[in-house]
Amino acid sequence: MNRNRERREGKDTREQSERGMQPESQSATLDARPTMPLRWVLLSVVGVYVALAGLLALTQPMDLGTPAQARVSPPDESAHMAYFDELTTAWRLPVFTSGTGNYEAHQPPLYYVALSPLYLVAGVAGRATAIVVLRLASVALGAVSVVLIWRLALLALPASALGAAAATVIAALWPARVVACAGVSNDPAAELSSLLALLWACRLAQDRPSARGAFLTGLLVGVAMLVKSSALPLVLVGMAALYLAARFSDAPNRDLLVGLGAFLGGVVLLWGPWATRNTILYGDPMAMAVFQRIFTQDRATPEYFLQHGFTGLQYYGLVAWQTALSFWGVLGQANLWLPAWYYLLGGAWWALALGLGLAKLLVRPEALRPWPRQTWALLALHLVLTVALFLRFNAVFYQAQARYFLPASAVLGLFLARPWIWPRRTVLAVLGLGLFVLLALGPPLLSLAGLTSPVFPFSPAP
Image (cartoon, rainbow, N blue to C red; front, side):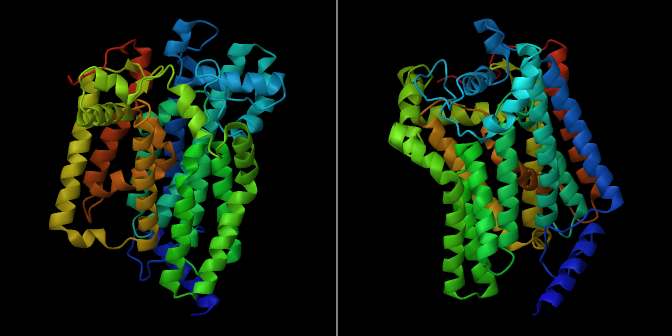
């Protein structure tokens, strides 16, 4: 098949995708353009997201120097501000020395360096102004990510415009994401950079391995790792993309090896200097050993729960339980919960999605077929690795918060959208997405109404 024919087939696939038709080929490209009605869907989702996250950014309490304020400000916001303080006053990257004052100092520098001019300009008007401006910058980064989520959804669901729209709504508006994008944090930047790298890896998997495409994907993964170390799974995702590209195109082993070399070269070119610095300062490229040694001094660990009567299974049950609840929103330093009835509604939405997913699998298995295998294999791998990294993190610290899944936000949206999309059953998608959007309104509106509480709902006994 020559290149001109491939381009014509790609164009036909995109046109069929935009009309919601089944394509003859399973290929899709990043050049897909939404039709005008679908553009309005995207603009609407971005608008709702900006309204919700912006409202939280403007109304959440901020830490201006007291422990009480720090408890109700967004997660780790004070520590992220301390990073900006040291970077812009001493003009050097912070060094991780304690688990109290600078516990974010181990973070890679790209987010902080990129936004330090904004911090300096806004800081002229006072610290409160600087915090609000940096919060709004997080909201803006999250809005760009919504567009990337949409692009990935079109790539993963080329035959279902409704499916792409549903995945975008869920991935953009799940409450833990909106909350995370409303504070000063590198999480929104980590999501954005991870999405871009994942999107490019999925494109890479649908063509023959090429040194140029592999090198660019490696650079994007390197950028993501310079934003946050949680992007590490993308290294394996990128390598898997090259393997899939070689397998489905019957490329020779030489092309695969050259591609792998180019990909890893791109990663090392950007992330290598930071890894070298960490090795010199802390003895390991990820700075994980020093982080674990210092951070455990003043943070809850699994041992704390085991000493209070929990078994290992009960501990991970608690992690899963609190993480599931926090998916629907928890404010402050992950300690201001919303009313119990709100989480019950969220649980009902999940139960409906599970029931529909099982029905689709058992009753209509043919509805699972028209989706690109390479793309979904990479999405599944990325989600599995993200979950594994999260479980590994909670094996050392108790950090049961759904916001750690932000780098996989698009993947979550795609998998959670699948149960609601049935042939000729648009009403199911409308009802499911309508309920989801109503739940997404919960964190900002219930917070403004003063209905948050430090009491952990439905707390299981050890």
